[in-house]
Image (cartoon, rainbow, N blue to C red):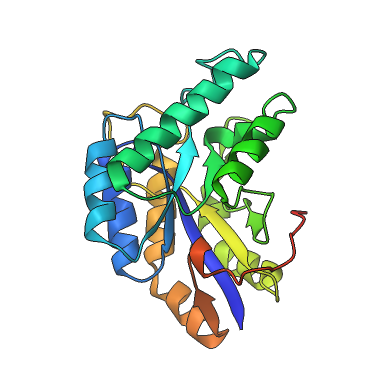
Length: 232
């Protein structure tokens, strides 16, 4: 049986994203979401998290805006640590629990200046950190690169082919960015979110899960002591 976490990034970034996450969770597809704790639509996302206890909710640490511009000096480790801790404290204060996992907006935790700080924070709180846990991170379900949209890459047939190639005996996180088009939310990755939403809601995906005996899980369901996975 393959273990799959379908994790929606940018939870809280807009009401359209929140709505998509809630609907896809109700369909039984999205099992987990990474929450941006300091966005205008964060209160709406928190309300959904309280209403849907089966939805795993992690902390999507945001240190950059939608144009990938940092709002904290990446060379100032103390400032970065304070930003991570502030967002963690607010998460715990609002949800009254630790996140199920940690990751970072636009994967800035990969930056060599930031990686040790994220690893230390994850270890301090005992949380799985994206690309530093037993879960293999799969990020290929994304409809844009080099600033050019590729809607065909996030269609249902493309996603099914990707899943067929990646699922094995290691738990996998399928990263996704579903959302309804929300013109109040400005992001370079915009219309693609609605394509992702429609793909993830397609009946063929649920049929695939049933046929391949895919168990959809949250980070908290990953067996304790599972070996660390190296993301290809």
